[in-house]
Image (cartoon, rainbow, N blue to C red; front, side, top):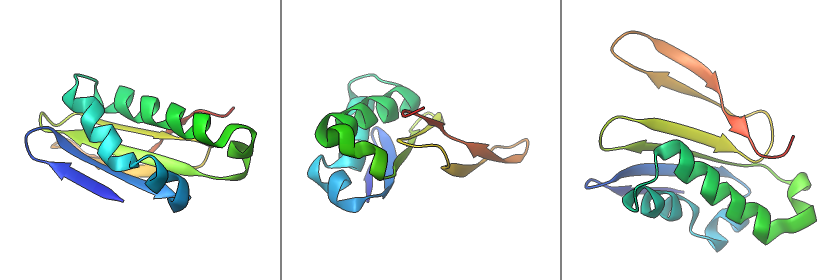
Amino acid sequence: GLYVDPAVGAAAATGQGEDVIRMAGAHTVVELMRQGRSPQAACEEAMARILAIKGAKAKDIQVAFIALNNQGQAGAYALQKGFNYALSTTDTPRLLDAEFLLK
């Protein structure tokens, strides 16, 4: 899913769609940024909600969030290891591995 508010920023979610939809994942990330969280902190807080919804079953799925605020700051966070994303700045494009919740 994708949610954009030009006054705040944008977020996208990928993975187990049923669980992302249940908590309006991309919208939740943008709303957390509206409340003052950085894109990274917003992704992490939204992922904690996924874990609260799934409980022990979280180990069987993958969900990831990526966000960009209207100031150009980016963040990404996944439930499990293995989500990577591209981030391009004026200096160089990079392929990054997202931090993840379940170790």
